[in-house]
Image (cartoon, rainbow, N blue to C red):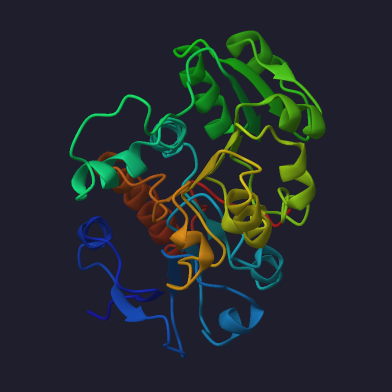
Length: 310
């Protein structure tokens, strides 16, 4: 029996291999020719030219929520449905967000390096002083599914929660005692600025030199959204000049950063390799959902989780 040919940006995780279970033929991203489906795992660019080079394509299945790398209008124009994996990774990403808040505020990674190094020979209570998290002010850009879960966790730390969104979310205000503010008000007031927005033309370079100038010198920036939401050059300068206290990035622009990028040399930045959804449980659920979209598309059925062209 001939298996459906699926173009994927290999290698995919073991959970994906286990879920697809020999039901398709996975071929590398460089393949061009007749194919039944595209499976995007590491966010390679999917544009009209890519779709045209794969005649017979029935579906694009994205392992993850963000689809800024996929030209949705080009897919819609060709009648190719696109699916993603919404909802199931919110908790894991919010957990990672708070891990970064705590690690950056309390200098956990820097402290770990110091404790392992040759200079830690005596305890000095004046060294490695960080910023408190409890009872501080958290500012969230993007009160979506992940933003709401971050706000929920902030309540356990007695934090004041501010947020900025395209529209007010009165339900979140009632549930989390969150306060809707302007972008400028959030930047001026927040001790921790958390970015959970999707990457759109409006959010690209959302945080740049102007925004860093508004932030407190004791503030921490946490980005779990997309790398281009932050101007990397402006961030590097802000951290070098101590315009802000620290930053924690689960995403960068580009991703990964070149090994000689100046951000990698700074002590007051934490960089993780896009770990937001990287728990075993969540990644398996993502693989299951992505496979469900894939097989529905192959069968010509509606996708369980389609993404519109907007």
